[in-house]
Length: 427
Image 1 (cartoon, rainbow, N blue to C red):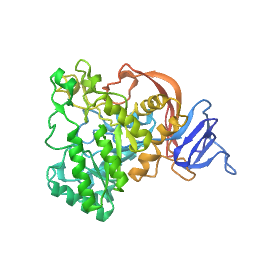
Image 2 (cartoon, helix red, strand yellow):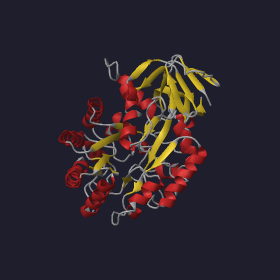
Image 3 (tube, rainbow, N blue to C red):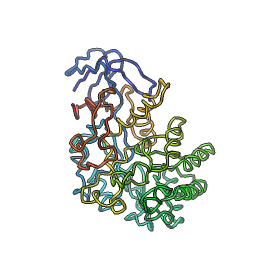
Image 4 (cartoon, one colour):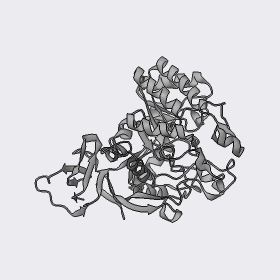
């Protein structure tokens, strides 16, 4: 399909563009930016006056719940949620059932996603067999099957020798290891940020040092192995300080943060709201401010939705018993726009917000996405940054209806999502 998107404010951080320009799409690729290529006749024209035209969002952590947890969500429902949220490329962790530790399982997931012909799905392979932290998986075979990196999801490796071997192997073949820093013992079983609030509410705590102790270990193993590591969903000021130092030292490390942690603190638990039960837990106000500042100074490379759909049976329980997780695919764009609105006096805030959910995550994951360069895959989102909408279960396509932002009014509404040149969704 030949598409012409006209009169829109084109924001393409990868190429430093933020201006009113037309976009031309043909054969699933970006054909031209600005003026039409010779002999171009559009089959469909979209007037984007007053709207923003940007690369499709790249989400570094979205659990699609297949295979194994179809009662929580299905590939169909979550792919629909992705395109409604403007997400055209997503990375899914390996903690499915069975775990993504076999090439056949990865190929099946990729095949199912391809048939749906909506967002592009890129699985992470399990770093160890069954995520048990004992034996390494066949990383080369998993890479051939379509894995873009290797992770342990929420399962820490207790044996550091195993982690060292994994990093050495990954370094040899140029793979990236994705780790969420958490000590396997400190804070194990905790449900909230260890602080005065958790003490008052009688909730078991997860101290910040659970994150920082794990980071010290990871950085020592990186120095020994030379492996490239991506740190997932950092939650504390102390952890960000360590990451800043590691980057200055020249270690090949990148990191992301969950979009919930950009806005909320442990105080948002309120009267034991299970929707605010997340992993890692919502931290203190000081931690939140450090996250917001680190997004501006570049310490944090990307923001992800940390999309983890949970069904009513596992969420509508006392806080400590509820399953952690929240739906996020359809909130990622609006919550980033909310952050941009709060950066008073910064004219580049919107472009920076778009960069952190397009070009930067794509670069870190090594994916050909997040750009509107001529010849690139035509993954595009058209959105109205001013349109307001209310977060309600009925407004969400995801099968998971639980988010701590229920009832909030947010700005930013997706009008159209284009994946590989075809109109995947239109409001």
